[in-house]
Structure formats: C-alpha cells, structure tokens
Amino acid sequence: MDEYSHTGASEASFPHDTLFEIRQLHVGFGNASQPVVSGVSLHVRRGETLALVGESGSGKSISLLAATGLASRQAQVSGAVLFEGQDLLRLSDRELRRLRGARIGYVFQDPQSNLHPYQTVYEQLAEAILVHTPRPYPGRRALRQRVTELLTEVGIRDAAHRLDDLPRQFSGGMRQRVMIAMALALEPALLIADEPTTALDVTVQAQILALLKDLQRRHGLAVIFVSHDLAVVSDIADRIAVMQEGKIVESGSTEQLLAQPRHPYSRRLLHAAGLAHGALPGTSACDTLSRPAAAPLLHVQGLTRSFGERPVLSDINLEIAEGEIFGLVGESGSGKTTLGRLIAGLDRPDHGTMTLQRTALQVPYPPATRHAIQVVFQDPYASLNPHRRIGAMLAEILRRRGVAQPAREIERLLQAVRLDPALAQRLPVQLSGGQRQRVAIARALALQPRLIIADEPVSALDITTQAEILQLLLQLRRETGLSLLFITHDLGVVARFCDRVGVLQHGVLVEHGAVASIFAQPAHAYTRQLLAAIPGQRLRPPPAASAPLPTAALIPIVSPSAAPALCYA
Image 1: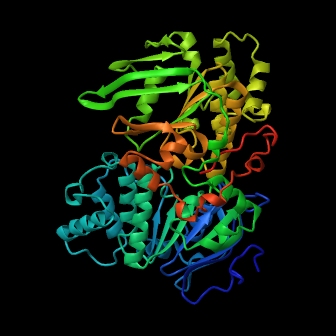
Image 2: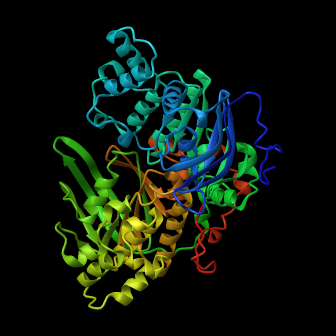
Image 3: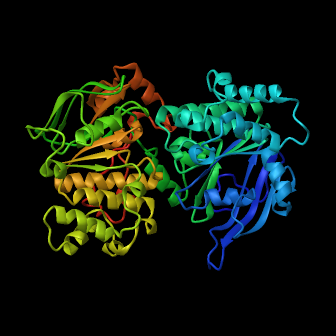
C-alpha cells in the first residue's frame, strides 16, 4: 500500500467504475541508468476529475504521453494502461490513433504551438473530425455546422463568422478554447488537459476552468488535469495525485490532501502555492512588516500612449518609492507591458512626464539612466543569447559599467542570485528555467540599478520555482534597497509579495493603493473581478487561523536567519 495514500487502498485495486487506469508504468530512454517514470499507478473514474500535480520535470506529461502512445519512439515503456478494459500498450499505432481521436481527447499547454498557423480553425477542426470518422461525413454544410456547434459550445462568440479565421486572429484564451473544441470533436469519454491554463491571465484561467467543469458535467467526461499549481487544481479536481521524480508520492481526495498533506513534497507544493495556513486577501502577513516611509524614486504623471488610432495608455499617474515593490496588474492587453517599456525608455510616450530621483527622463535615456532602470523579461530563454556563455554575457555588461577585470564581479553576481559560479561556463540551454531567470536578474543587477522592471518574471515557471524567485527578489531588496515595478496578471502573487498595487484596465489605472487596503475593500468592479478569479480561494482558512508560511525551507540556499518571509495571501 502506498505510504502516503489517503484512500486506504492500493492503487492496484481500482473501483469498478474506473474508465482509465495505469498500472506500474515505467518509462526510460536509451541507456539511462534511471527511468524517468518509475512504477506509476493511477486511475480515473467516469465523470471524475483527477489532478496530476508536480514540478516541471517530475514526469507528469511523459507519463500520460507514454500511456497514450504519444511518447517518442525512443521511449522504453512497460506496465499496463487500461482504457475501457483494453490495454493501450498492446495496440498497434493505427488502433491507438483511432482510439485517441474518438475516445480520448488531448488538450496541450501551448495552443499556438499545436495549431497550424496557416490553416483556418474550420480546416483544423474539420480535419480532426474527418480523420477519426469511420464513414463518409454527410456533406460540407453538415461539417461546417458541426464545427460551428463545437466552437459555440466552448464559448467562442459569433462562431459561424469566425470559421475562416487563422489562429493568430484569436487571443490566447480563445486559442485554448479552439484546442478544447478539437479535443471534444468526437465526444470522447476521457479528456487529458496538460497545463491548459498556464501562462493565461487570471480571469481567462478562471473562464477556462469553468468551461472544463461545465463540459464535464454536460458530457459526463472523465478528466485528467495536469498542473504544477495546487491552487489551480483545488478549484477543479475531485482527487489529486502528487508526482515527484517520476513517482506518485501521495494521492487522495482534494479536501483530504490539501487539508492534511502527508508527504513533505506535497507540503512544499502547498507552501509554494500559498494555500497552507495562508491569510485571506486583506489579512496579508505583509501588513505586519515595519517599513519606514521612503522618498519617491519614480514619479509618472499624465502618461499617454496610442498606437495609431488605438489608445493603449490614458493619463497614467503613479509613484514608486525607494525600496518599494509596486505591483501592476491587469489582463493581457491592458497596457502593463507598454507602461513598463515607457518607464524603461524602450518607447516614447505621446504625452506626460517621468522623473527618476527628481531628474526628468527624456527618451533616449543617457547611459547613467539606462543603468539605473533595468528590465527582467518574462521569458529568460528568449532574452538571453543562446550562443554565448553566461559569464561572457555578464562580462560584456560589466565592461559597460567600467569594470576592466570582471571575473570576480561575475562570481559575486552569480552568488547574489544564489547560483553556483561554475555555471558561468554554461550556455542558457544547459540551465533550467529557474536558473535562466536568476541569470536574467544577475544581468540586471550588473549595472547597479535603482529600479528593476520585472515583466511577468515568474509566470512561465512552476510554482515552487516561482516561490524561489520571489524569495530571491525580496532578499535582494533587503540587501540593496532596490525598487521593483512588478508586472503580473496574478493577484495571488501580488498579495504576498508587493507593498502597493495598481490595477490597469484598457489602459486606465482604475485603482491603486496599499495591497492590504485594495484586497480588503476593492473600490472598482474590475478589481473585484480579478480578486474573485484568484484560484484556490475555497480552501483558504479563515483569517483567525492565518499565519505567515515558513518559506526558508523552500530555498535552502538562503540562510533562514537572513531570509524575509514571503507574505502568503
């Protein structure tokens, strides 16, 4: 029996209504001494949602790809995978393809990579239907009607007039709806959704989760929902299986596992998600931090920017103090990144003024101002030169600062972001996502800035790596007095990380103030909408039970005595 199972029964003895079950799955590649998946057993019943949770690299995706015959041919797969009584590992490729399309639907994380950029959504959905339909379809008109019905069912408005649109003409959330429609084209019994809401903003994420729950209810679907975020799965899952290093380390009902996690790794994921003993919005542990009032560092007044006839930012006024973390939130397209680019001097405003330490800012910035304001972007891989070693990139920037012999300073920078200095000899591709983001932060620090603009710096990272990067930024603020403009779509992160917050909607700063005040009494309807969309709220304890989380254990490279606690909301 699994030591950390909440069910009291072995995963080998599954209920009679089980639709899909994996028994002792092992997956290896080449001559590797250790399999990437080892002895995984799980099941999902008809009409049930099972969440498979773990960090990047824990084996979640490869387990399901191998189980459904989608892993690469180099994969060595053993065990049993039963779907409606059939062992999928014994089927031919042709039989598997037919079964996957008709009975098992798959929704992947990145719809942009999985939709053909030059085929219309009608062409792609029609192909999915025709390939898996054993008999001729009754005419083009009927096919267009079926595709229209599918798109309407997943919430795409005016679907009949969007059939001939290309994927790039849809937003990220709408593209994910197209992927869900494609997976449901032949009314499968099982839907596998692999990180379907990662990188979507919080309100779109909530809409996709609500859509999946509604579709499950209407069609009686079994759903396997893959995620790194326990807060997200708490809103959708009936049961949770936690995966670490290729093994299931704990499983049980959602309520049991989140209320009483038994495995240390499950507790770590809960801590990172801000659920375990977390305060409600408005009762953040940040409220208790005693920080003296600081002088303004950045002052923005009347900032306006349009692209052609389309206004992007309208009359923006804000201040960021010395040593302050100011959160800027809003959905995709609200103008957050444009405001960050204007402050960084990467674009010119149409109207308005900006000052840094009472000195007026004029684009193009002089070198001293460019050094004082640095940017950390969302995707560290795209922002790092893939052909240059980490040390060489940092050395180039240090020479701009006038450092003639940069070797010692490179070592200091890497240590400052909690990286082994030996990584200076590596290329970006040889680092994990979290390590690359630490390098991006080190690169920003190399010019000794007063303000760092962090544009969605953790949204592409799994939940525990997010916590580590946030902890690092807090530590750097303590050590250097840095100010941060923290751009994000995630109010949950803002609640436990920022001092003040501004809310952008359609280019207008509709509300701003102290985090505790905004979360406790949001004045604007849009802010209330964003707060309502934060995942995991139904499992948060009442304020009386709240306490700040012990986060030092999450990041052993930071001394517990020196590490400031993250404020979990």
